[in-house]
Image (cartoon, rainbow, N blue to C red; front, side, top):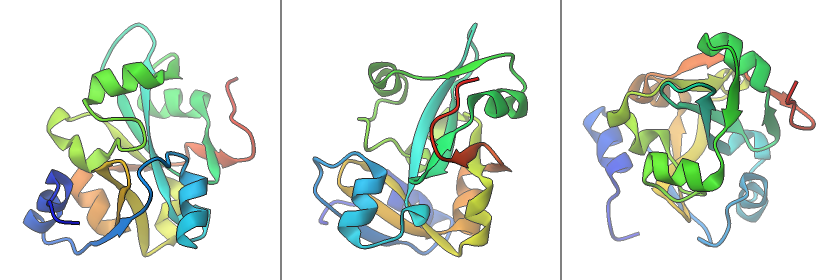
Length: 164
């Protein structure tokens, strides 16, 4: 990778070590990316954009590839009545990034709440998007939390997506 992304500069500013992991930029599914890289899916984190119904700041959720967002729990934790996943086009419009390249590291200037799913706390490093399709960064969980000011919350679960 020749160009340095803002997410990398930000990590360097905060003295957080990282490793660049590249893959085919046509891939957007975190589980497929984990498989292609030969990494367990619980170590590859996707960044989801959720919107409180009735307005308010969008929320970013970092969730392992093999887990699904529990919207009702996220709404409770975020202190809103109801929250929904942003449609792809809305997520792209809100973040200015393409789906598959949405990164909490590239959006710190927006000061949106960031929630990191609880199981990440059991890991030393996770892979997160660098803010561009085809590029992930392997970062220490504690360093990532500090830089994106993530709150730890049990917002995901194994199995199918839960809407209720």
